[in-house]
Length: 401
Image 1 (tube, one colour):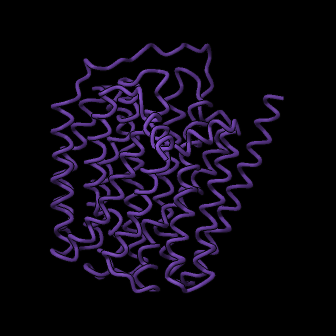
Image 2 (cartoon, helix red, strand yellow; image 1 turned 135 degrees about the vertical axis):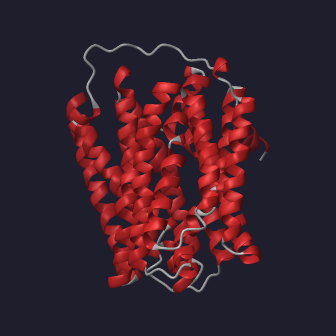
């Protein structure tokens, strides 16, 4: 047991202080965005919208994410990651508080769009910051540490959010979200400064390929859109399933969603370190992760036993722990020097596009055909994504063969 603990903590060693500080800022920020997992419940139970209306409202969540990712890249190039991250955090703190006041369909759509645009400006800036503050040999583990901070935040956020709803109603979520974003922004301004960066010049590659001209990479991006489409159901339509089909309350739903982030925080770094030692291809691991995510929807259709929800959450969590890091690794490996920004931007936008179509499609499938049919559809989409990734793997083998 002592050897196990030592090995676990050694996987975090050697990272710069600035990366730990950046992780702390990210943790506070993501723990504060506790309103997001409860949006579907808030809009149906508190605002009285239909499932179809909620689906369209949440599509503006994805549109804002795409806009924010694109705008964040532009701002980072122009004014730097430091000012971009700080501005995103402080302005989103105000917008989260204001989001509780719109009541009409279109005002809420606009509010969600503005909040996500400003909040997701933070995302590309964080990747640039990781590159600036980390040592080259520790860059992958630095990215993993930021991801762990995000998931720990999402673990604590829903659990705390459920308590806030039970004790003070939904309005309390918006105030707490605003406060935590403000605290994260202040912490960033005080503890992280561009002068502490350790950026090294990129290798210049003659006539590098762009992401949009790389056909195998475009197949990969399409598969990731499908993977994202499936995965986000756990944070939009699945809470409705927990509530309507299994009669769980907000606190129980928060604990179940929080289990996802907690398990990722505890096991992702050791799992990735173990799987890297096996020398399998990144795409092979992404296929495995996608399949596990699809199976998580299949198993919950097999029985009405409430414990199956935990089994489903375990499957999707392991699928996420494998699928996301190795897909990120493939995107980085596929990119070429100067064009790395275009590759990573397309990778980020793939998941934002999933938000645009995933929420409304999931809601409409449930509204028209029910939960059972919807979950079987998600399993079928997972199989389709795996087929695309197998085709990609064959193309890659031809390139290297």
